[in-house]
Image (cartoon, rainbow, N blue to C red):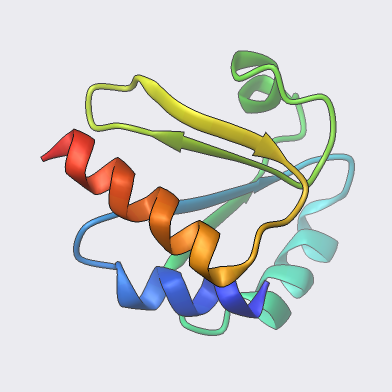
Length: 98
């Protein structure tokens, strides 16, 4: 998560980073978000009804979904990726959304 947090700070003027959590409670989610997202650039919340997860067909975490400004899903993947792969995917999202 430090890589995502650093990228969120770097791309803050171009991309919104949102991190919904599930199967937890608000206090535990807040504590974990405070630990992982120190830049303050990642919006997080508890999706206790799993609405967001159902909307995008996410069966488990971690999953990344890149959504363009017109709400089109550009790319989605399960698991983790390295910084260069993430940067390339974000740059592609910005190019498509521009």
